[in-house]
Image 1 (cartoon, helix red, strand yellow):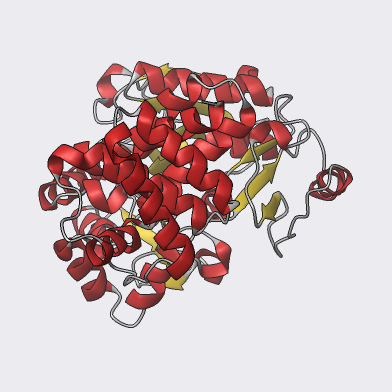
Image 2 (tube, rainbow, N blue to C red):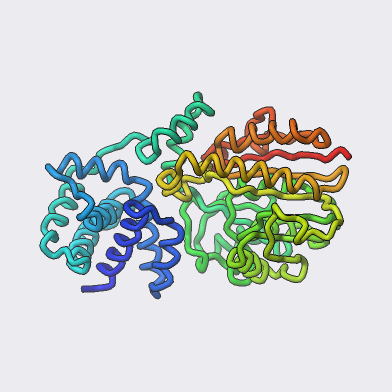
Length: 431
């Protein structure tokens, strides 16, 4: 059997771990892809896994329609392999003969030789009849869907549709190593067509994502991958030249890096609570050539007494831990893993972080609160509660570049202007 069957087997194991064992898609892929040498096979495995998780509702509907008894718990690995097979047909659109043959061979590698004929029959049915449609909310738990519907009653269908679609690939050009227009020319020279978003001097957008090694100069730090909504953080914070800046939950370092790419005079401290995450910040800064301009350390933002030297910061960025409901199109397993208690814990942590970091902001300084959530209790309600607790802070205005005005910060919903869902609130300390 060729490596094509092996790639399908790897994808099936990733899908099984995510859908049936509650594992993180991102983490499972990171481990699985590290063992694959061929860049094409890595891309294939990643594409199958993402499509299977994103379209699980359609694939489950197909099995329910075509089988008197769809695979149960004991046959979960078979279900995962079938999902990998369906993904190759729709939405990936691979040649049917290659998808069928390699997936049937993978059934044998999976120890399911006795079910290889079943795999073949079901994939041929999918090829012949097409896969059924499913509601855009099929992958969302009822309780979370109810919360989104309550917060965005007029927009819920658009949110769900955008969250079920594959995201474009946004690029951030390193302003210290070249202009956006010059990098656009480099993309064209290697056969990559990009969109040039208005009003975003560092951003380009590819409709179809490519591996990082296909991006000219990526290894040299000329460009990074960062969604447009995340790039807007630098616009919202707007630290003055030479300002003392804190990025309080900084991993993997993209937002700090963007600030330093724009202004190397910033005196920036990037912290995160876990050493492996801090190592990722350091790797990011090293690739981009900005390691010498920033101080990075492992620290708990809630425990300022252990890391703060007492000198206030002119600007503080809190990109807070959140439900990630604004980036489901990039992390389609998010709805699978969330529980109501998780949201309660996250909201409590966000409030604690805001209170702790308020104390380190200089008078006249800025505290930017940001999340990749679309839930009001993590966003506007969190800011309203903070302002009620802190009379020495006020909400500073932002404009429509940051989405819709909620009255307590600005919210962008998934897919708006081609970006992820994101929330921004710029808070100014009065005294």
